[in-house]
Amino acid sequence: MKFKIKAYNLQELGQRTNQEDSLFPALGKSTSDDRLFVLCDGMGGHEKGEVASATVCETLSRVILSAWHPGEVLSDELFRQALSAAYDALDAKDNCEERKMGTTLTFLCLHASGATVAHIGDSRIYQLRPASKNTSARIVFRTQDHSLVNDLVKIGEITEEEAKHHPQKNVITRAMQPCQEHRAKADIAHLTDIQPGDYFYMCSDGMLEEASDENILNIITKPNATDEQKLEMLRNVTEENKDNHTAHLIHIDKVEGDASIASNEESHSPVKGTWITPEFNKPKKKRKVWQWIVGIAVIAVIAAAASFFMCGGKNNASELVGDSIKLAPAKVRPIEQKKDTLKKDTATSNAINKFVKPSNPRMKRETKQTILTKRQNKSCNNN
Image (cartoon, rainbow, N blue to C red; front, side, top):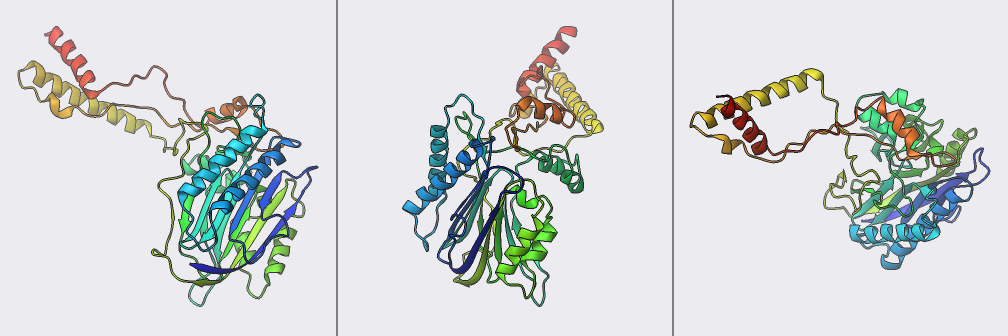
């Protein structure tokens, strides 16, 4: 796919004393020839946050542009290499003792196969489509925040409205940090449903203090407004914002050529890496008490039947042998308080404990064969 675009960006301090957001291309330097866009929201207090965001932003863009040219397909492998280089650069900037700084990441590359987007943390990427004769304006794609409140919404603990005012709304569950044994991985998506008139909007969470998805959609797809006017409207919405706020606005003016599949799908094979909190994966829905009772009862009946056949000379137990049994409720543990300084894990862990029941440390991991053998021996001894 070949694109003709118009690119803009904005950046404001808010009520902070220093700017911890970084972007590529730099403020006021975006042109219609650009196809690579990066935005990072640093954290860690004075100087630390801006060092982290600038380091990742500069390294990631430099590594990719040294090996990729507009018009070519961007491979996941190249993005993986660039992300690894950004982590290495971040390690070099830190003495690996304090480990207080970190940054979010949003990444967009327009290339021959469409667009590749990736993110870590709560900075967002939107793809928005203006209204046409037959359809209303809509958000075609939006990244999902790696944040505590978003996880709580997913498992049904709070509503989206409650999330907006939640006391832990600034806690994020993934970030790029130096000297980590387990580096946070990026969620990556390949977008091929890109049409003339679409917009890509990349922003730090500071842009979202007073702006909902609906506000953003209405502004960016506003009929008869120029791109410059839309950018000014976005700036006006953030006038009273406290945090640094930064954004890229990319207008897809023309598209030539079609991708092989016209759909936007999140990759099922994210770039190589691991969670900062490895034991946390996708949050699971809480099981109701009656479901556990029924499950235990079913297991007991099966075990009793198997024991009967074993002791009675009719052994069918081999049919029940399978994978190991592992009962461990999912845990949601935040790793960052994204404000002026990084908070200790203890505070956020305590906040989560009231929502998620911790795993039982005495819970054993046994095979079904082991369980059946134990029950058989006990039953046979009793006889």
